[in-house]
Image (cartoon, rainbow, N blue to C red; front, top):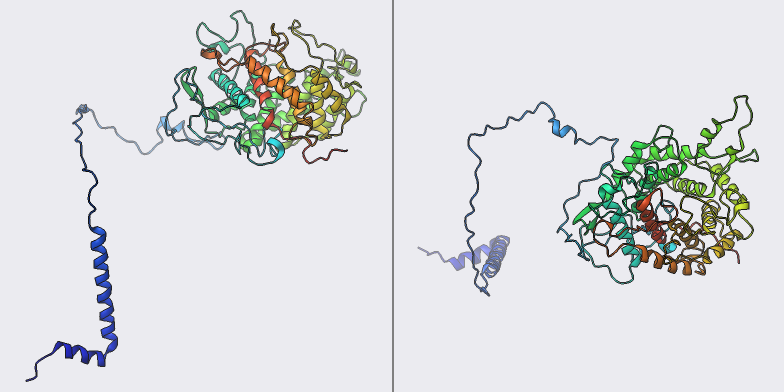
Length: 559
């Protein structure tokens, strides 16, 4: 009998079915290779140091008493405490933001606590900069301020480096405003003491304010946040070392804007009693900017109603054709004050207008235009006609007529120094934002008047004029600043240097407590709005670098 030989059997199988043998061999080789790899990979590496496990001591926990009855869950209705939290489609909604990674050190006096908030939107600034080029007109991110509204780190502390004087002053002023915002979202000179430290207020105890201008001061204050590029959607916060707390910027803006919306009447005005055009222009401007920054429909309707009211309030041109400027009262109220009911023509008061109110209304309407709201250009043409009429040949501008060009505008605080070129600054802004003509010869005539009276803080502080400095900064930055087609810096350069020095001297940066960061030194116009007015206008002045797109951008200057 022939014995079985495995080698001969494999040889025979290979001759008769070679593909079977090849498959078996291939699988065997793969299995061997995988086994070698697995053993090598799973082999433990020698420990470089021993691992020590520390046992946590037991923690005593207080157990709830066993006799508490279980809570019965009712599933067939919405619990009452939840119903109020439901989001309605017609409300402003700020998305919930998780807590910051680490709480900043808000210890009073800590200089590194403030988050490095970027200021401005270099691809489209504030009210008049909505949708336009930003800092230096490049449309590119600038290293100083960030690249979009409210951009930048959330919850990150910072050290402000050298050369950031303006940045630090703006953040200090915004923090002071956040500290003094009332619980209802408004800012009020009359009620500001409610937010001051006990025994150490920001104004003298005998100071007497009223609430007639609360709509205007609230609008000015919230414009500082909007002008820096922050909206109700912003998630960043301000750190207040004076109070040891932080403020979410989106909440500050939302509460202020909603307060304005609640104050607005059906006709579009904001003043609680009779219309006062400063309040109406500023309130409209704030809502236009809020809409322009976010395109949130919640702000659009109130903003448009404010615009419509301003246009109805504009005075008629005394020539009998077209429109004119604005005054304190709206046109409709003046028409109702006719001396008789016999159908006679309205009194001459119907044609009264002033350069100050007119320029604020122009700023509000320009903001509305750039936000995409409906604005009748005849209103802007009327404003230009009025400002042209009150302008003298030397570039000085009158308050209510050309005969008063350069004359003192009297008022409650006439012991302060009056700056004759203040109306020239206002006139320059109206000309720039209505006609966009860099070749307008009046612009340079007025600029010459401004640089003859640069910002300065004299020993008695009576030279302080935040209003003049704000409009002077805006006018000259537009005229020959870094974004202008002129770019000469002949007027803006000296003004900017003097302005920053003056505001730096006035800022409360060393005083502890609620005064810290504010601009508390009064000027001739702060009798109505107090430190809220002066701080807000000072901050707006320091935002002209990035807040406004240049009115002459893309326009060639004649040689």
